[in-house]
View 1 (cartoon, rainbow, N blue to C red):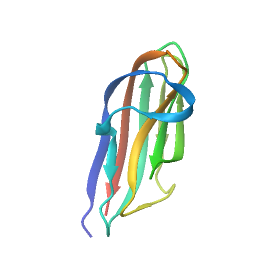
View 2: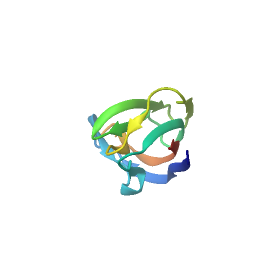
View 3: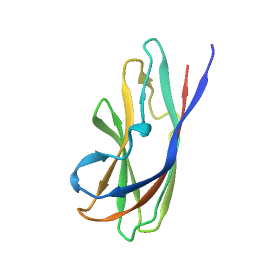
View 4: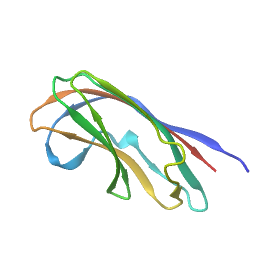
Length: 115
């Protein structure tokens, strides 16, 4: 069985639009799992430069799957192995919840493997 490592990662500026629904951080932080493949998230690491709590949300097909709160000027490191597999045909993306008008940058690194 061939496995492929994938990463959704980078440093992205943001301006908060509220806490009701995750806002898109960047189109670069989305991945379509190919049909016939299983995706397994392995870890999430993130950092927050602003002076407010923000939350990165892992979305599967537009619905929240996991929340990663990051304290003001803080970071988070969450192992995700054996949490659950994501079947082919699904879309994975990272969104952001932040209070209206709060701005800064988030550093995100979601590591995954597909097999």
